[in-house]
Image (tube, rainbow, N blue to C red; front, side, top):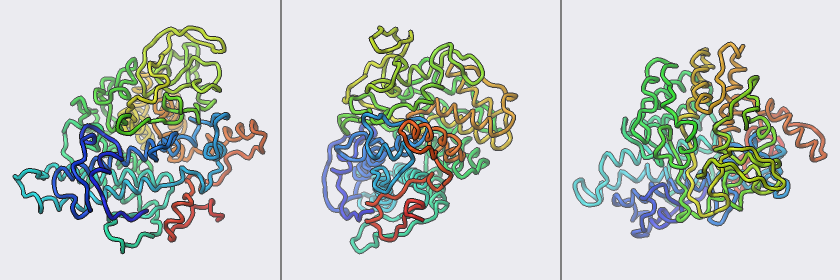
Length: 545
């Protein structure tokens, strides 16, 4: 973690991207830190910089970097959603594909998440000072309501970044004060993961208490629904299902971007509520990615503006010429029903409406760059494709209008209601409420146009949990959650061992599988991080422990 002595409006506004129009405003000044946080405009710039840093952390880590969608590498690439494209694989991808991570892997670096935390710390520390420079009722005033909102967002952002860190690396240093002096100690030992998660919950509670309730949210900011979603997610990670349910219901009480309460009937009795009108209709399912502010189920989304940020050249999940490092994994390609003759579990299924709005199903192979192309985040239309040599087409497919441009704005989902309904179903199942767990699972299935399930199909909690996890896999591919689902439910070895053995067989290597060492659920610390902080200790077993 670097010591930061200066902060500029220029860096806040330009270098770190945009969430909405605020972030695109022209810089007004630049100067030393002690000349900053003196007006509302400074506060606006600081908030913009914080969100911009988070955008960079999730989508692209360097100004000229490509394939740096770290949310995919951290949250999915190690799972059964993705695998390397042989013709384009690098050491990073080979390590991930064969579960052979090393400290030299570029995705093992947590620096940018701590940079975002540093910005949040600075906002929390310095926002109260503005009123000493700009008295109430004068030009440039930061009103009490806006100060509370900005402080809440900073607490929530700090919590969100620490939550990512805790899930990826486990133990981590907790810093709640900004670096403002060269004499401050930079090196700091790691705190236990449980303490990091407690810090997340403490911050989120403060954020929730400060946030205006029942307000129409701007979905590019961390408001009431987003804060409740993150808190529920943290409790689910801790397997504290009763507290998770409390926060699910607080989410349900919040408003979405259209002004509709997410699930008003689900706020009271646990397991109540939940209807089709809560969700985006299946035939326009990807509207929540194309125009998230118009969808009833959007909660928190990143807006990547190509003019402000450059190409969102995200490996695997973008539709650009720079995407080919990873492809949809063979088992998922095979098992996700694409046409009416496919099977869905034990039954013959209708077409899953999500499939054609997620990726290119028209190809017989997946070796060329655009085979199995992922177009979930891009506009398109349903058309009957023209047969082309070397491809095996089915009729009535979703064709992306934006197949190979790097000049396209994208909206990247962090939290949405479908994901939270399936997570809620998982919590209900874990607390013995199979009936309502199946009800919420079936809401997602019915919207997708696939057969719903019955309680009698699930003899125990484990089988129902697997059904919920599979539905989350189909629903949320490309959204950075599948790996965390497998770790949270301790299904990594069960799911990944046969996949790793198949990959090892194909590569001519010994079929040792995933192994039994659960310490490998976590990433190693990058060598860069270790060199910058001499009090850090490498995660076992990567350090030879």
